[in-house]
Amino acid sequence: MVSTKNVSKSDEILSVASTRGFFFPTAGIYGGRAGFYTYGHLGKLLKSNWEFLWRKHFLSKDNFWEVQSNNILPEPVFKASGHLENFSECRVKCSKCNSEFRIDDIVLDDSKCLKCNNKLVLSKDDGFNMMFPLVVGSGEKAYLSPETAQGAYITFKDEFKATRGKLPLGLAILDKAYRNELSPRNLFFRLREFSQAELQIFFNPDLPGFPDDVEWKGIKDYGLLLAQADNNHKVSKVSCSDAFKKFKLPKFYLSGLVRVQKFFLDIIGVPSDKFRLFEVPEGDRAFYNRIHYDVEILLDSLGGFKEVAGVHYRGDHDLSRHQSLSKEKLEVFHDGKRFIPHVLELSFGVDRNVWLLFDIFYHKDLKKSDTLLFRFPKLLAPFQVSVLPLVNKEGLDVKALEIHNSFRNAGISSFFDDSGSIGKRYARNDEAGTPFCVTVDGQTLDDESVTIRVRDTSEQSRVKIGELIITLQRLLSR
Ligand code: ATP
Image 1 (tube, rainbow, N blue to C red):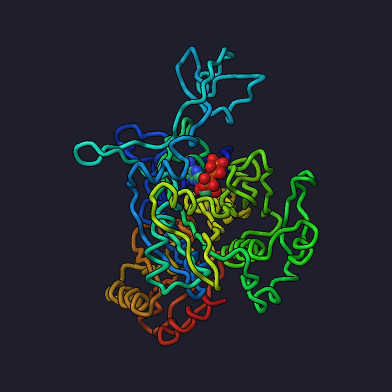
Image 2: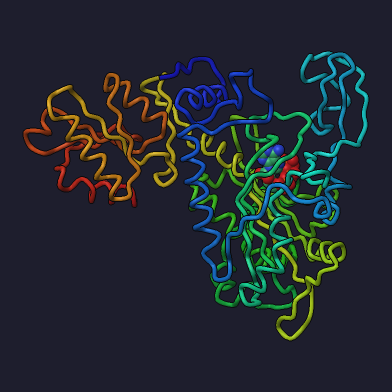
């Protein structure tokens, strides 16, 4: 158990994360490197569970698929996408300690070096491209992809044909992205290697059928939590039909916002007062984004609302650019006309989403002032149950292992934990966010019963082994 006195929330999370095996600095044995983290066994399970829920929510539509492209892509891809020309950061360099920072991270009026804290004159230039260059084979230029989106655009032609030429077509990629960030900071928020879950929806902008009438009827009264630029980004709940009329947001865009908001509020369990759809004003968004709202979540550990995803209406920018550079026809014949499909992109930073789980579901037990637990939703928790044999009595371990294996066979993710005092084991499982512990004790061998302990209340109840799986399945589905 980690002592949590007088430390900030992010320090506590970091401490539990490394002791329990959620994540570690990469190459820690060599001192670690800024902007790189490694998921440990619990972190990888948590991340995979988030990805599972993402896939389930966003890919449950007909003609929405997941594809996998490459992390290394040839130079022409990034010429067409504009990354070669525009994906650069304005940087400032400290003339004393030589550290470099993104200009966004420095308040220029009062420019203090973030590393040595000296009030210094900072030299400024704007020519730092954030892509990692590579040489493939004996000399072909390539780059590590800074976003998964390009993989979907260059696959569009093949997939459109293979899926028999239907629109809307959704192509999702969950994979790594690489950006040579100048000043990696804020933990999972500015990494140099990170994961994205991005869905590109290709559609006909002139067809009123996206979303279709049934879908629109289902969402038109749904209240979006919009933080409009011209309202000082104050959040107000606006129904889709009002946003359509007042803010001129197209229906397809609203259907994307609804799906994203529902994912955060209903699937992940983010409280609505910590969620907002932040309108990115024209001057701050990429020129090709015709409409752009970011999903921002209020995170105490990072001191405010932070971006974890974005909803981008990119028009026909990407396919047009790839068409003109590759000389391959990317326009389609659909609904009786020839055109280049438009793209609505739902873009999520997976690691930022994992961090928000630690922040949002962090809980301190006030009765036991030193106890920290993560109240992860049951489907996100790395393990749904832990099996703990209590005393070292003959046959007890065997019984406990039988129960553990029966959980696994029933599709319940189970951890077998037989070392240390029972108090320590409960605390350890609370820190791992395991919703239920099943304790096998002396009484088990006499009457075939065990106790189930609930993480969030510490309440315990006795259950017969024969009814254990069904009881647990019931508890997990609530
Ligand atoms: P920021 O403004 O924070 O640099 P961005 O607007 O450049 O982010 P996008 O290019 O829209 O980000 O990428 C989509 C998503 O990928 C972001 O919403 C974020 O969740 C994630 N992301 C982007 N850059 C990073 C990074 N360096 N580390 C971790 N996640 C990132």
